[in-house]
Amino acid sequence: MIFDVDGTLVNTLPHIYRSYCLACEKFKVKEPLLDTLRINYDQSNKFRNTALAIGVPSGSVDEFNYWVYEFFKKEIRENKPQLIPSVVNILYALKARGVDMKILSLELYENTVYKLGEKLVNDVFSEILVPHDGKPAALREIRKKYNGKIIYVGDCVSDGEASSYAEVKFIGLATKFSFSHEDKMLEYVKRNIDRARCAISHFHIISHYESMLEQ
Image 1 (spheres, helix red, strand yellow):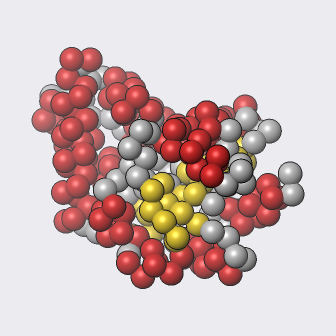
Image 2 (cartoon, rainbow, N blue to C red):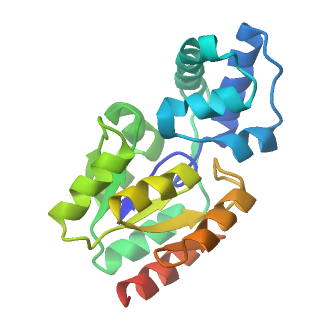
Protein backbone atom coordinates (compact mmCIF):
# COMPACT_ATOMS: atom_id res chain seq x y z
CA MET A 1 0.00 0.00 0.00
CA ILE A 2 1.20 3.48 -0.90
CA PHE A 3 0.03 6.37 1.29
CA ASP A 4 -0.26 10.07 0.71
CA VAL A 5 0.48 12.15 3.85
CA ASP A 6 -1.31 15.51 4.10
CA GLY A 7 -5.03 15.06 4.67
CA THR A 8 -4.57 11.29 4.51
CA LEU A 9 -2.48 10.54 7.60
CA VAL A 10 -1.84 13.99 9.07
CA ASN A 11 -4.36 16.77 9.71
CA THR A 12 -2.71 19.61 7.81
CA LEU A 13 -5.93 20.95 6.27
CA PRO A 14 -6.02 23.91 8.72
CA HIS A 15 -2.39 24.67 7.87
CA ILE A 16 -2.85 24.66 4.10
CA TYR A 17 -6.02 26.73 4.36
CA ARG A 18 -4.23 29.31 6.50
CA SER A 19 -1.37 29.34 3.99
CA TYR A 20 -3.72 30.02 1.07
CA CYS A 21 -5.40 32.81 3.03
CA LEU A 22 -2.04 34.43 3.81
CA ALA A 23 -1.02 34.20 0.16
CA CYS A 24 -4.36 35.73 -0.88
CA GLU A 25 -3.76 38.60 1.54
CA LYS A 26 -0.28 39.15 0.10
CA PHE A 27 -1.58 39.16 -3.50
CA LYS A 28 -4.76 41.10 -2.65
CA VAL A 29 -7.01 38.24 -3.77
CA LYS A 30 -10.27 37.54 -1.92
CA GLU A 31 -9.76 34.73 0.58
CA PRO A 32 -11.72 31.58 -0.37
CA LEU A 33 -14.04 29.80 2.02
CA LEU A 34 -12.58 26.51 3.24
CA ASP A 35 -15.21 24.55 1.28
CA THR A 36 -14.40 26.55 -1.85
CA LEU A 37 -10.73 25.66 -1.53
CA ARG A 38 -11.53 21.98 -0.95
CA ILE A 39 -13.91 21.83 -3.93
CA ASN A 40 -11.18 23.25 -6.18
CA TYR A 41 -8.08 21.69 -4.62
CA ASP A 42 -6.00 19.98 -7.31
CA GLN A 43 -2.40 18.82 -7.01
CA SER A 44 -1.97 18.28 -10.75
CA ASN A 45 -0.46 20.93 -13.01
CA LYS A 46 1.73 21.98 -10.06
CA PHE A 47 -1.31 23.33 -8.17
CA ARG A 48 -1.95 25.95 -10.85
CA ASN A 49 -5.57 24.86 -11.33
CA THR A 50 -6.28 25.49 -7.65
CA ALA A 51 -4.89 29.01 -7.73
CA LEU A 52 -6.78 29.91 -10.90
CA ALA A 53 -10.03 28.50 -9.49
CA ILE A 54 -9.88 30.74 -6.41
CA GLY A 55 -9.28 33.84 -8.49
CA VAL A 56 -5.51 34.30 -8.69
CA PRO A 57 -4.56 36.10 -11.95
CA SER A 58 -2.85 33.72 -14.38
CA GLY A 59 0.32 35.84 -14.49
CA SER A 60 0.72 35.56 -10.71
CA VAL A 61 -0.02 31.87 -10.24
CA ASP A 62 3.55 30.55 -9.97
CA GLU A 63 4.63 33.24 -7.51
CA PHE A 64 1.39 32.80 -5.56
CA ASN A 65 1.99 29.06 -5.23
CA TYR A 66 5.58 29.70 -4.14
CA TRP A 67 4.29 31.80 -1.26
CA VAL A 68 1.60 29.26 -0.34
CA TYR A 69 4.35 26.69 0.17
CA GLU A 70 6.56 29.14 2.07
CA PHE A 71 3.67 29.98 4.40
CA PHE A 72 2.83 26.28 4.75
CA LYS A 73 6.37 25.37 5.82
CA LYS A 74 6.22 28.13 8.43
CA GLU A 75 2.76 27.05 9.61
CA ILE A 76 3.72 23.42 10.23
CA ARG A 77 6.84 24.47 12.14
CA GLU A 78 5.01 26.93 14.36
CA ASN A 79 2.03 24.63 14.93
CA LYS A 80 3.00 20.98 14.53
CA PRO A 81 0.23 19.02 12.78
CA GLN A 82 -1.47 16.15 14.54
CA LEU A 83 -1.98 12.66 13.18
CA ILE A 84 -5.58 12.09 12.15
CA PRO A 85 -7.47 10.14 14.83
CA SER A 86 -7.39 6.33 14.29
CA VAL A 87 -4.51 6.53 11.79
CA VAL A 88 -1.98 4.92 14.15
CA ASN A 89 -4.33 2.02 14.93
CA ILE A 90 -5.09 1.45 11.25
CA LEU A 91 -1.43 1.48 10.23
CA TYR A 92 -0.37 -0.97 12.92
CA ALA A 93 -3.32 -3.23 12.07
CA LEU A 94 -2.21 -3.30 8.41
CA LYS A 95 1.37 -3.95 9.52
CA ALA A 96 0.15 -6.90 11.58
CA ARG A 97 -1.43 -8.29 8.39
CA GLY A 98 1.94 -8.22 6.70
CA VAL A 99 1.19 -5.28 4.40
CA ASP A 100 4.25 -3.54 2.95
CA MET A 101 3.52 0.19 3.32
CA LYS A 102 5.29 3.10 1.68
CA ILE A 103 4.84 6.87 1.64
CA LEU A 104 4.53 8.90 -1.56
CA SER A 105 4.72 12.60 -0.76
CA LEU A 106 5.47 15.80 -2.64
CA GLU A 107 6.98 17.11 0.59
CA LEU A 108 10.66 17.13 1.50
CA TYR A 109 11.77 13.90 3.22
CA GLU A 110 12.58 15.63 6.51
CA ASN A 111 9.19 17.38 6.59
CA THR A 112 7.41 14.05 6.06
CA VAL A 113 9.29 12.48 8.99
CA TYR A 114 8.62 15.56 11.12
CA LYS A 115 4.86 15.41 10.48
CA LEU A 116 4.47 11.66 10.98
CA GLY A 117 7.01 11.21 13.75
CA GLU A 118 10.21 9.20 13.46
CA LYS A 119 8.91 6.25 15.49
CA LEU A 120 5.85 5.73 13.30
CA VAL A 121 7.91 6.06 10.13
CA ASN A 122 10.46 3.51 11.36
CA ASP A 123 7.87 1.09 12.76
CA VAL A 124 5.45 1.03 9.84
CA PHE A 125 6.83 2.26 6.54
CA SER A 126 9.47 0.53 4.44
CA GLU A 127 10.21 3.56 2.27
CA ILE A 128 9.45 7.25 1.72
CA LEU A 129 9.27 8.10 -1.97
CA VAL A 130 9.51 11.63 -3.36
CA PRO A 131 7.87 11.78 -6.82
CA HIS A 132 10.30 14.12 -8.57
CA ASP A 133 8.50 13.62 -11.90
CA GLY A 134 5.02 13.81 -10.33
CA LYS A 135 2.76 11.26 -8.67
CA PRO A 136 1.37 9.69 -11.90
CA ALA A 137 4.86 8.77 -13.17
CA ALA A 138 5.98 7.61 -9.72
CA LEU A 139 2.94 5.35 -9.28
CA ARG A 140 3.45 3.87 -12.73
CA GLU A 141 7.04 2.96 -11.86
CA ILE A 142 5.98 1.41 -8.55
CA ARG A 143 3.27 -0.61 -10.31
CA LYS A 144 5.83 -2.02 -12.74
CA LYS A 145 8.16 -2.94 -9.88
CA TYR A 146 5.44 -4.83 -7.99
CA ASN A 147 3.60 -6.29 -11.00
CA GLY A 148 0.55 -4.12 -10.42
CA LYS A 149 -0.10 -5.41 -6.90
CA ILE A 150 -0.37 -2.05 -5.18
CA ILE A 151 -3.10 0.17 -3.78
CA TYR A 152 -2.73 3.93 -3.42
CA VAL A 153 -4.50 5.72 -0.55
CA GLY A 154 -5.08 9.45 -0.90
CA ASP A 155 -7.44 12.26 0.01
CA CYS A 156 -7.51 14.25 -3.25
CA VAL A 157 -9.35 13.66 -6.50
CA SER A 158 -6.04 14.40 -8.21
CA ASP A 159 -4.58 11.42 -6.27
CA GLY A 160 -7.25 9.27 -7.86
CA GLU A 161 -6.48 10.69 -11.28
CA ALA A 162 -2.79 9.91 -10.77
CA SER A 163 -3.77 6.34 -9.88
CA SER A 164 -5.92 6.08 -12.98
CA TYR A 165 -3.04 7.20 -15.18
CA ALA A 166 -0.79 4.59 -13.57
CA GLU A 167 -3.49 1.87 -13.69
CA VAL A 168 -3.30 1.48 -9.94
CA LYS A 169 -6.17 0.66 -7.56
CA PHE A 170 -7.20 3.60 -5.39
CA ILE A 171 -8.81 4.16 -1.99
CA GLY A 172 -10.03 7.74 -1.74
CA LEU A 173 -10.70 9.25 1.68
CA ALA A 174 -13.83 11.38 1.96
CA THR A 175 -13.52 12.78 5.48
CA LYS A 176 -13.49 16.21 7.10
CA PHE A 177 -9.67 16.01 7.09
CA SER A 178 -9.39 15.49 3.31
CA PHE A 179 -8.08 18.28 1.11
CA SER A 180 -10.65 17.42 -1.56
CA HIS A 181 -14.27 17.98 -0.52
CA GLU A 182 -16.16 14.81 0.41
CA ASP A 183 -18.70 15.31 -2.39
CA LYS A 184 -15.94 15.63 -4.99
CA MET A 185 -14.30 12.39 -3.85
CA LEU A 186 -17.60 10.52 -3.81
CA GLU A 187 -18.34 11.71 -7.34
CA TYR A 188 -14.90 10.64 -8.53
CA VAL A 189 -15.18 7.15 -7.05
CA LYS A 190 -18.65 6.62 -8.55
CA ARG A 191 -17.20 7.39 -11.98
CA ASN A 192 -14.32 4.97 -11.41
CA ILE A 193 -15.93 2.20 -9.39
CA ASP A 194 -14.11 -0.48 -11.37
CA ARG A 195 -10.79 0.38 -9.67
CA ALA A 196 -11.57 2.88 -6.91
CA ARG A 197 -13.24 2.75 -3.50
CA CYS A 198 -14.32 5.53 -1.15
CA ALA A 199 -13.54 5.45 2.58
CA ILE A 200 -15.72 7.75 4.67
CA SER A 201 -13.60 6.91 7.71
CA HIS A 202 -10.07 5.59 8.09
CA PHE A 203 -11.42 2.32 9.48
CA HIS A 204 -12.82 1.54 6.02
CA ILE A 205 -9.30 1.39 4.60
CA ILE A 206 -8.79 -2.13 5.96
CA SER A 207 -12.06 -3.54 4.63
CA HIS A 208 -11.49 -1.93 1.23
CA TYR A 209 -7.94 -3.28 1.15
CA GLU A 210 -9.13 -6.81 1.86
CA SER A 211 -11.92 -6.70 -0.72
CA MET A 212 -9.63 -5.22 -3.40
CA LEU A 213 -7.13 -8.02 -2.83
CA GLU A 214 -9.80 -10.50 -3.88
CA GLN A 215 -10.50 -8.76 -7.19
